Image (tube, rainbow over all chains, first blue to last red; front, side, top):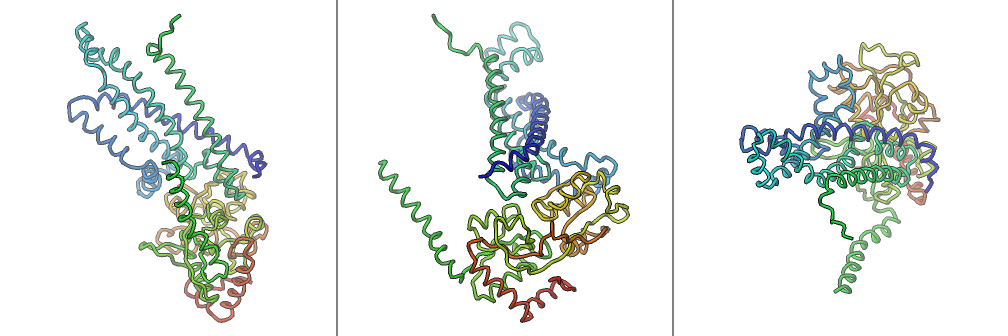
Length: 232
Length: 264
């Protein structure tokens, strides 16, 4: 093992980490914003509201992220009007937006289902009590259902965030140089798979550590009422 | 119970490992050779819609095997992992248009070359891009990752060009026709037969000079083998000389190209 090739090329990894953070951060943020209204729609009884959302989550959870990304990047790229559009809107030539688009819709689908599950699990007594206090439907949703749903969804959502981080490694397949992309370049330049990919693994583990730590802080604050009571 | 489990695992490992040990012993007299090829680099190596491998590399590999009277199995392997898989003994030789370069020689041994062609840029007709530092500034170029062309671009044009690296040459062609890159750099013959002459390549043309600086482009394409297999290297070198001499090479060449691909 020769880690001097890594120390010489560490800037590739740092640039790659920055791209990974951007891609994952942006797609999680937009995905979360989309998924809250989707989850509310999905948990109603009315089929024409919940149906389309069900179809969306079914399609995006039913196919691999890699296939979705290839469909958006190479598939759309073959369409004539996309080719013409990308002459005037040059951002359409950039693989970044296709990856971001695929990641966002994918994580939105999973997060929708996570939050829906948490909404459906709201104890009916809480809603009844809120109604009895004279709260309107939207007020019940805002003050009672959603806050407790977010608490319940938190542990499952932290998994989704970590999966998304790891899923983002696929971006390296459509010319983006994220952490994995940097590792592939170093591997191809020096034919040293161990050094190149071990370093990538270390970067991913550091990011995962930050995510886990962040969620623990959130849980401490949101789940404070669930902590075992201190007796002395 | 625990002992039984340990015994079962041990037995599974022994049984599982047996074929590999046997293959290793067998391979030493080179009556059976496994050859790694790429399958995504037309016209040298491509996968037909029905899943079969064909192309110049494939024909050469089969001709060499016939010459040394060995039974050959072709193994398709993505370019990125083609050298690591050779080191891991997934196969014994690589016939995949691999250029003989100093960097690769640190890891593997090469036979003599079996062909040599220069590299060239391709542009869209009417794009007006010229191959000089001013005209290339800020342009994007597609290249296959981990190739001599990738190294050449990174070293010579890395500061002015935006380099997009693809796993296969086919993916670079897709992005060229989708209008996402301005230029391609690859082997001139691969570009000509694999892209420009196809329907997808209509409206694209060669631009600029031939590049063949041995510093980047090495001494032509050779067959890569593990450094320990000197006997195989000697056999393959003799076989290359033999098919050059007996006309087999020319017959294969004429099937794909109308010029001398062997070079000087």
